[in-house]
Image 1 (cartoon, one colour):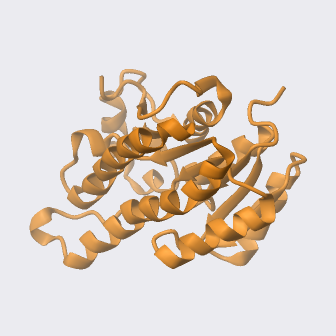
Image 2 (cartoon, rainbow, N blue to C red):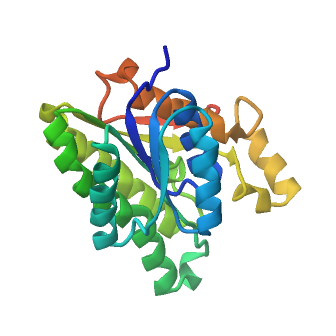
Length: 248
């Protein structure tokens, strides 16, 4: 039997990279998938069709998770369309790297807004349907950068570290309602985002990883399946590193 049979999952930022891999893996495992995107409507519709090929219900919503009202509206729309939400995956994120000395206020604010505030917005909005259902799994995408920091990424590291503190607090608040809250911290994952790095930099990265390779988006998606499924029903408040041993 599929691990996520008939569960309703909402994945933010699903148009590419890790988010897209999560949406596909969830559909393969029998979940009905709602997802958000900010890019073209055509791309959103194409992904919905790709997901429905697995015999599940899928629908894309053009929505900005960092906007409080839009997030609230999104949750209401998903519940109206799907009945409830069993799993929320907060995956939407951006980077605007730069050394602190040169970082603009806009670079700081936009990364905090998109990466951290979106997690607050959607988690707050989804607690109502999850409390009503007396169950739920919230999965927040953090990063190993949020655990150890990274030069040139003070804004990104702060947003991702904030997600960890938020995840643990929500686990404490909602545990008695049978709602679980966990985070996944990917390491060096080969996506469109990392594809922009030059080859020499990529090879340097790989040398520091015990498994001697970059991770695949599907490997992060598999960790999400585990945390969304009943296989992890006694796990909450945790940060699962999917990093090939980079941080040990």
